[in-house]
Length: 383
Image (cartoon, rainbow, N blue to C red; front, top):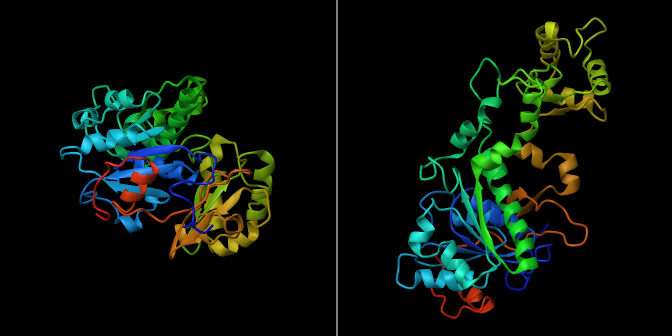
C-alpha cells in the first residue's frame, strides 16, 4: 500500500476524511490513537515542542507519526497557548496525554479549548485517569496492567507474570478506548453541536477488556490465578509448546472436533488422556510436549498445514510479515525500506491508506497555517 504524496493537504480518502484532529505531542498511546485516526483519513496535525521529545525514537523512525502533519509551538513562550487555541478552534477532535492539570496550567485545557470551540471533543489519555488517588502519579503500561488485575492473569502458574510488551495496556486498554471515545463524542457533537471531554484511562480500558472473565469468575468458571483456566494455558489443548529447534507452536484446539483433529495429526494415540480430564491434565501436557519436541517447527507446520487443528507456529515479527496469509492480505506493507502494519480495519467503500511518512517536527507549519486558516501560526520548519 504505497504512500500517496499527492494527497491534498492532510486530507485522506478513508472514512474519517474531513475530520480535523489536533494532537498535542506525547509518547505511547496518544500518538498511536492519533495515528489510527490518520490512517482512516483524518487530517491530524501534531503540535511538537521545540527540540522534540526527550525520549522515544527519532522522528523519521517513529511510525506512529505516519499520515500526520507537524507544527512546532513553544507552549512556554508568550503566544504559544494562543496558537494552540487557534488550532483547537478549527479542530473536531483533540488528543492530549499530559498528567492531570498540566494542560490547564499551560492554558490549553478543556475549558479554554471548549470556550473557543464548543463542539470540540477533547480526548485525554492517561494511565490512571483524571481523578483518584493515583491520578497525579507517574506510571507505565506494566503498572497499569498490574493494578487493573490483568498482568496477574498472564503466564505459567509456577512462574512470574509474563509481560505482553506494551500492547495490552498502552494500545489496547489505552489508544483503542480513546479512539472509541473520540468517535462516539464526534457523533454526539455532530448531532447536537455540543462537544465534551473524553477521560480515557489505561486502567479503565484494561479492566474493561476483562469483562467476560469477570462473568466467568462470578459463575465459578474461572479461577483467580493464572495458568489454570480454559484460556490462559491451563488446558493442555490451549497452550504453547517447544519444538526440537527451540521454536514454539501455539495450540488452540478447544472444541472437541478441533482437538480430535489435533490429536490425530500430532500422533497422540488412542490411549492418550482426554483433553478435558483435570486429573490427567499434567500427563497429557507432558505427552503433547514430548511429541512437539520430536520435530522442528517447520516440520510441524507442514503436518498441520490445511487442517482445522487450530495449531500455528509462533512467529517473530519479521517472520509474521513474510507469512503467506498476511502477505496475501497485505497485512504488512513497506515504505522507504521500513516494514510496518497496514491501516486497519478495512473498509469496502472508503479504505484507509498510507499517505505520508512520519512527520518531522515543524515540517508542515506553513502548510497547516494555510489549510487550517491560522495565519498567526509560527515556528521553525524543522525541529
